[in-house]
Image (cartoon, rainbow, N blue to C red; front, side):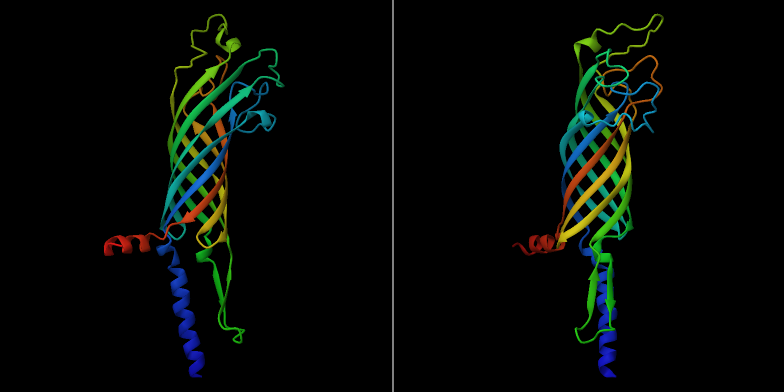
Length: 259
């Protein structure tokens, strides 16, 4: 009977340690490979809505980048994250309803975001299930290495766009005073949102896959805003990330001891 009592106390203590495990794994850093897909006035289908059209998803509109960031777990289910991504955007009218128009652009930009990650399925140190049904092997745990989250944030994009000669020589429709082609725009606010998953393949290391949309406050991400345009540009980003949980408690302890 005493043995059962010890095992029960051990179970409670171990469960409590696991429940508080996120407090000693609050800090994480990551490196990422973002892939961007632009939606806007160039390379779109006639009459398409950039929010819903799948006809405008094209391999040639994909552009790569590189990025990274740092995250801090505010609660077991909530992480505050700052990311910095550098990459490209671009597209062409080739193969669309506007092939004869022949517009093309290329944009280079730096994206700085602050995001909140809300975990619907928390990270693995929150997903331990202990069993005392099989005492021969002692207490065992089943670790679920997958986690799932949604995110929302805000930030900015510093960018530089270059249009081809055909677009630069565009003549505005009669009666239109709006400046349709403008390469001087270089900043826009960004509202990112989306979903992501993580997989813990090794202690403190996670692989991540994230899909998100970016609403921007400009229609000149492609240096072009048609007189008939009804929406600002936007883009989607797929991120492949490698995460590392920083043992910052140990680092702080060493720094205080002078080691």
